[in-house]
Amino acid sequence: MTQTSRAVRIHATGGPEQLVIDSLDVGEPGPGQVRIRHKAIGLNFIDVYQRSGLYPNALPLALGMEGAGVIEAVGEGVTHLKVGDRAAYAANPPGSYSDVRVMPAMNVCQLPDAISFETGAAMMLKGLTAMYLLKRCKPVEGLERGDFVLFHAAAGGVGLIACQWARALGLRLIGTAGSDDKCALAREHGAEFTINYRTEDFAARVKEITGGQGVKVVYDSVGKDTFDKSLDCLMPFGLMVSFGNASGPVAPFAPGILGPKGSLYVTRQTLFTHITSRERTQAMADELFAVVGSGDVKIRIDQRFALTDVQAAHRSLEARQTTGCTILLP
Ligand code: NDP
Image (cartoon, rainbow, N blue to C red; front, side, top):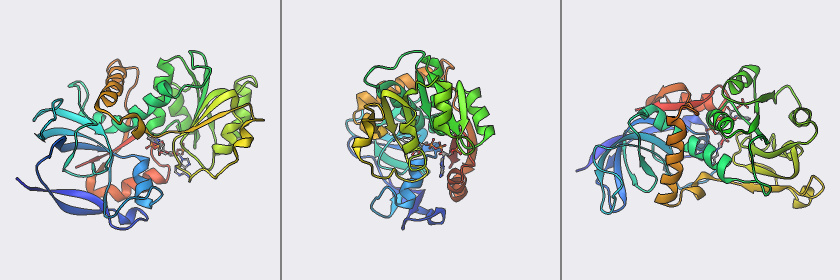
């Protein structure tokens, strides 16, 4: 049976005005696929990179990599989901900005009853990201309770989850954010120290806070504006985890600079390398469900937009007007 769905797509890359609502036919799931009807949709900064063309894709492109809803149909070979299940996902290819879609089942997980659709839609991509950053990106000398780490954009979607998760792990997280109010929010959510990087020299402040030692890991999703100075925040053998480009892509650099700064390590990470199998996805999701279920990490949804207001949602994310998570409601 074919049905129609609204789907937000771009036919050309560019600004938020490129986001249009198309009507698409949605059929039955093939082998390894499910059809899911969304109850809520997560908005992520990666959607902006895809819309702008920073991350190139074939056009037209349906947007959105995070969502939650109810399984309507299950394709051959899918055993972990059945019709009627509550489910949530972070997944490639994009297409979650829609009423209903057919998609690969591999990254779709059953959503525990205690977690609402809105929370599920807000937390999968951002929460799995916070999880792999804090628990899988280990500096060579290990990461232990009491270690200092620096997390940029700490009051954002990934940021507020990371602040709370780091606190639960006993890490001493220094968070940066673009206003004093955002800094206060990050501290409320577990950042031990915060730095307003629009008004303060964050490298100097990090040295002060850590008694001149520096941090073991920097998690940097801001990119162009913060990368160079972030290297100056690390202790010897420290790890620079670059995982985003909210201010623009990091400029090319010579690896030679890493030696005199303390034999540093640099890695560029993406969630999608971490969730390439059903087993890995489920294991990571189980950890996320557990930490949310325990109350150690609360998913804060500060902005809700109707799907039809998707352009406004993108504008506010890009203008640094949001805090915590943002969802779209179909
Ligand atoms: P956020 O809610 O964190 O929004 C991005 C934040 O970046 C803004 O609120 C702003 O906070 C900060 N920022 C700094 N400079 C700029 C700028 N010039 N323009 C816009 N924002 C700026 O988004 P998400 O939680 O969705 O994602 C956080 C980051 O993590 C993004 O860069 C995203 O791409 C990345 N990411 C990477 C993943 C991966 O696996 N590689 C997976 C998920 C997310 P402030 O005002 O406080 O500076």
